[in-house]
Length: 270
Image (tube, rainbow, N blue to C red):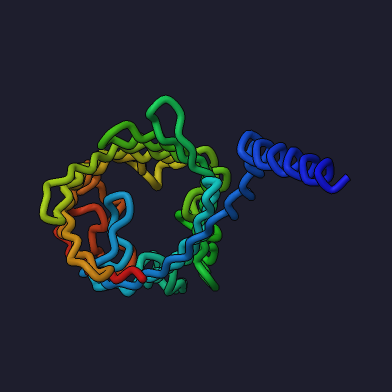
């Protein structure tokens, strides 16, 4: 009996060892989704957006927060000081609006070597009173919302934006579009060269007050330098097709928001 017991135990032990070697290993637990939050703060010699001056050639302080998820979803908020709303004051009607706050979110994914980006962006101008200029420009609240889609192939990104609200206070401008093409060329040693061309089409502004219209094209060339430790610097040369269009001159000061400019900036990301 003792001999048989020893043989039986030996067979069981051998069988267990063989099973352990041939059985598939337990499946590893799926990796937890990763999220990233990044902050940035910076200053520019002047704030230009789609080629147009937002601060009448004056410096602007800017900063934001970006959240990204490993699934491709992202969201963020960004803010800047501005001047253009106050400069829209007309005659004895003074309007106010000192800041811009952008809130955005979307989803990024890749297919067949092309990176796609779909999202929505709302431009908020807290306490702005642009709507007080009821005549002759017939303006309203400056807050604007756009949906956008972009595709990146190699160094090139093509983006399309469509306003689902009126555009920056212009009545009847819903459906205005902006399409742009930007390239980012790695020059080595932390330098990136980015040529850009865009076309802003503004609907509903063909009245006699806006003789010449508000649609225009913009061009820029930006040289960026990654200085390490989260610090980057930029130098941009900017021009527009509207630099002789009087519609882009400030009502209050006469400053031409569409004229050519050179802009320098420094940003810290952490």
